[in-house]
Length: 409
Figure 1 (cartoon, one colour):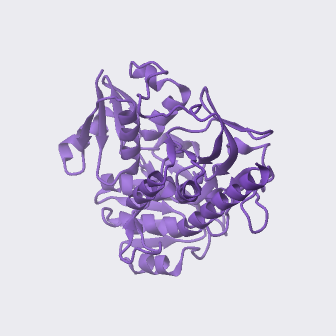
Figure 2 (tube, rainbow, N blue to C red):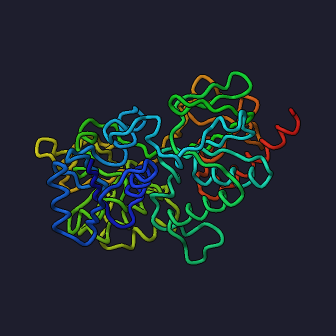
Figure 3 (cartoon, rainbow, N blue to C red):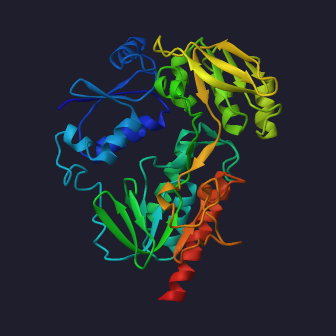
């Protein structure tokens, strides 16, 4: 069995893919294409033109990138492809027996700022929490290049580095970590039930910190050209667009950060926004406006990604939101940064939510519509959506859970 993974520097998705293989005890050959043009061309050819990392091959057969590999894992097919039995595929140290404690005091879902802060406070309260990381371990900060507004870091800090420190702190106080995605929950009675595949975990309380995922435009052409010019991560894929002309869709901080970062490589970046003004913070707007490589197209939406027949992005079909006028805009790549959708589908029909899928909590607390279930971070916050506010509500959730346990037991 030969596993080859093509990677590059500062690629959180590469790290997630390698981490999963390492936990399974699977040896692999890593090929870093960061400063090796020949290897870069080799990867693109082997992956049928994909310009995104990682690209993973098992016995010479490409399975795609990090998302595809984790999808195979969720479906139970990855172990079979790797020649491992499902029972032992994860290796002896990667997954603690969730039944070792018959009923946990606290199970935390999610390992972003909200989940890890909740785990730190719960562990400090001697509640011995179990944290289920999810396949997107570390949350959105894992694909954030520079975090400049988190208190305590006057020179800023890389998103992945901040999450690494956070996790180490949670581990220090005794948090148990479990890699994988919760596939089912039953919040109808005590003890509460959380399932990861065939494993069922029982707990007196559950803290939901599953965060949000990058929103896609929703075009069929966008889907077909993902990895072939369409991307959702500038730090991962900007490297492949040296001296190219790129489009960024969006008007918030994420879009400005993506656009500014991409000017390190691209000859020109055009930001397309559906409104006449940005909703990004003033400092992010100023950086973008002052950058000579960034230009803007206002009051416009992307209706189609061009290049499906060619197998790569050649441009976008635009429509002016005010006049209805359609036009074609040539470009070599499209980076989408139009916001996020809360990861709450797992709880539909069990927890009260608003029409956008955000979990509703009681005023001033993290309590949800089900006793013993608490929500923190972006799953419940559609207003602020910052790392520091997510951490704050993670702290609140742990304290709320501790008080609930004291009152009910």
